[in-house]
Length: 499
Image 1 (tube, one colour):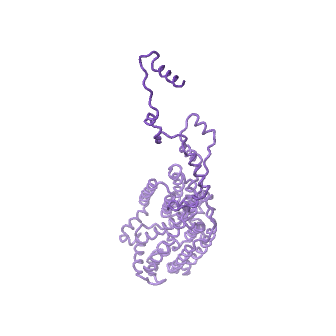
Image 2: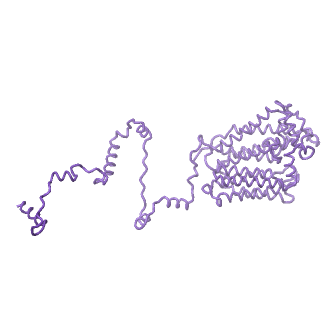
């Protein structure tokens, strides 16, 4: 299906820009006290966030004007590049060990987190795989298993850093792509159940993870230690009221809330802008997610739909996990709030993902496609099997005739839609009045008429046995005792009559 590129989804684009601007202002307010305490300028973290935002917007604009089919053939290479970057994290003098984990590459102010990029590359690959192997979506060995192997390897490398939050984001983003691709529901539920069991097991394997779960279940019992961040975050949420304290007037950022400009930036925002500001921010995120899924719905082909659904699902999962963690609905996982939390790599990668989404929006259709354009693309072996199954069983000479003689199909006839509607409504159509149409009907009736009446057709009354008996009365019976029998007497009578 050829679709000319049109303008991208500008409502989505400007909503993301507004979120990025709000994020830069919130980071400045939440990090100013921390920067001054570290003998740095008050705008230190905000300036770095602004530089990352500008770089991310440049990436967004560039990717949005590249046709998204550019990433289709390069999807396997992108996954291999993601593996390489995740392995470089553990190489000395290349990877960075900070906060007890090997999660960054680089030195000083120039470093990146490869796991953020690996999640996007995995979504691109899954969209490519379930487009190329669309007919094997219900086959476990050819559909599920290769996708699970690729995703599982990426999941294991991210978990070794360790970064369980990003690993769970990868897993659930992959589930979104699997669900959108139309795979069988029962194996998908099995995968979800397996992830749930694995999450529970991993949560209690490490001591710091089990401590986080305990602090999540009983935050006020651990208010002086690991539960301090959650308790102070809930305090900031309750202190905001309806309209908040005002911009840069938060009290929790003054040393009460640890790291207020990273994962727990949302409580600072609510404390300054209140419940009204929180609702407005949530509406902006909901609008972005809605526009993303609408882009997937009106995409022109399967790859674009799966790519848009996967990217939107990734952003939705990050938003839900962060907001659930800061409000006490989920354990603290360390996932930043998209476009708002401080973090150069996270912001640039999220804007890169939005650029992919906007690229798909440039090729959307005005109406939802009724038929998948890739639904007819099937392997040659399967097509031959389908034709063999549909062909009636032939034996003997008829089978040899089918094998050696080409089968000619009747050409399709296209009839006007208006005449069909008139005929259904009972009104005379113009096609019935034409001599060509009348001659065709007469010739078709003549060909369809049998040369002799069938067994079920009624017999004319003049040809019945009773009518023939009245017209031609039978001859009187010949005497049985004469010589020659009945046959000779009858032959003599006929000969005399003829003479």
